[in-house]
Image (tube, one colour):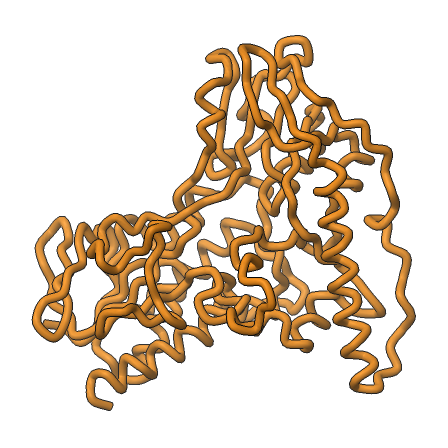
Length: 397
């Protein structure tokens, strides 16, 4: 019997370990692979964090405006893990109630814990639509998790499906590598990089945007929306990608042999990005007005410039020399090892503010767990502190 078990050795699990150790809670972190396994295996070569150093304090000292690359993130997480009681290669196969605690079944045996923190995350299992199975066998297909560089794909045009964070940045990477890119877009907001003399995300953080809680939202569907596009140290938008040479299309809806059909959503998708950018600026304007700040006037933003849209209704893959597809269609989490009573109809853990409906079980690292930033490194330490306080109280203070 151990006081607490943390499942998952990624950033959220390590944040939990640091918080528990700081409160004197005996615990162990069980990681099925290596520390930061997802960060090691699911990032492309040119990947950089899209959040600046000031938002990633859990990674240790770094320049305020630094945007760490994948290998640096892994190195910093490994350094953090060196001070935590992590067991690598300890896959949790089942978690079930046992007395006043939990039985944690691993491949090497069973642990009994008085409390459990599940920090495996909900964004590490690649999701690909059924449409992918209908593409011709000659076309190479990768998910964003497996993409590394343009040279990984056969020569020719590349179809990128999905225009959220990964899709837009991978499209950029392919264009920089000299590839022709067709980008099948989706409805995603975008954050202007700079506004009225500062990074927009700094303004939004001060406005409380990143600390919004689920019950603050007038429309709960916001929690299911893709994270607004924010590129490392610069703006990024669909119009900018079009001007860089990408062909923009709507969402793929059918495949018939070599022909892929798209819906007519491109205009609405571009407008959705612009509308979010406008709302973000309005929030900043309100902060400036409310505080009586003497801020600079709004600067021109190239991403607001219109672009001529002539999206194809369909695409002949062979005629357009499409030899590869990158599916930037998102991730989900694997919670099949949890007791079925703990999982909802959407196959996601049931919880209220991170607390499971069963006693002595908490979650970390889920999107919108407690706040908008709960799925970001910025939010992990604060959420971990709150959970660790509750664990300490549960264990008797």
